[in-house]
Length: 406
Length: 75
Image (cartoon, rainbow over all chains, first blue to last red):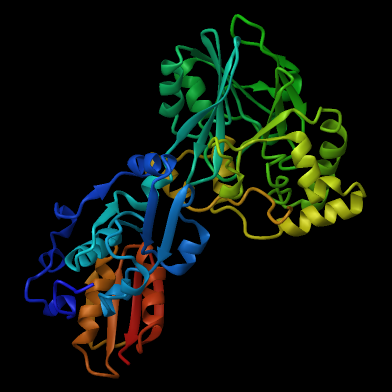
């Protein structure tokens, strides 16, 4: 491609760019794409070429994936020395979406590319905006209930709304509670119950806030909290059965410790196991985030080989996370039958307890989720943060699942 | 550390601290030292990565009350 401008350094250009004028943030000539629009285009299966201009380390940690997304990483500062830095790696006539941490550097690179003749859009708000995008998909629709899975693609977080004749239960909500309020309105239900499968370490729970807003009862396991939280809750360890809707919908709390000592799974209508962070489509929860990997791995063993053992193979496991986008199936849902998970998961086939504990705790000793200690403190109600701090804390990859478990 | 030039990028966010630093260091002679002062935590890792891929040398960097200072010798 012939560059439209001579290949000179920005300060030597004949036409000063918006950067030299200092007003580039208001540059209206660079088209922007919102995180919502991008999410919709990925969901629609569009071919998308992303030029991620963050540094290599941040890119490797956490990037936009899914659908037909192809992404290329060239840090923005490489364009300072060479405006042609991307030429060998970008196809001509293909729209490029530039992405950075907060949306500034992606505009800078977009301007360079646009001047060279590329068709380019910059992701407004960058990965910070991407981290706040949610999307919901209908998993099951019966006469008595509808079950929706809510995906937060940037974090790999999954939450659920179960709607039944005017009443709704939300499981493992993220902190952007408007998502659930809007869904409830759309489905014509009043949120009456909110369940957290455990104290989350990678994201801030929307449970207490959603409970306050709707008057719904918030359930969590007491052993995951420490001390007296400033919010009211019903202890899951004393709850065997929750019903809502005018049709009876059974929610059975199964004690499934392992990820955290108070982790719980929810068995709905004996068909759906909302497994929190205990069992994933591609592996088991990591047991090391409390600093007692060995002890918790033993509890995870008991969970897998005692509590879960008697559930039939055709139970659909719907976890609170996915570790890899390959876990999203062709319907856009993260879920698998318990039988499939049993047969494909190495750890779940390792009946010898010592070997199991070793596999699980060694795989877990990798990097921890960013800011997980602070996030846990917030979810226990020990610490309060404002919106800006909450957003900053949640930026970055999800590392809650044990990887490499096949 | 004594610098031949100081770039004050306080209050600016990505990519401006590095854009300014790049322009400024281009005007120095080889061996001279540039000081960059920034308050944008996001540019800290980026700046170090950028210096690494140039001929310049990062001599020192420090953080004090949210203010990051870098000293770079032009290569």
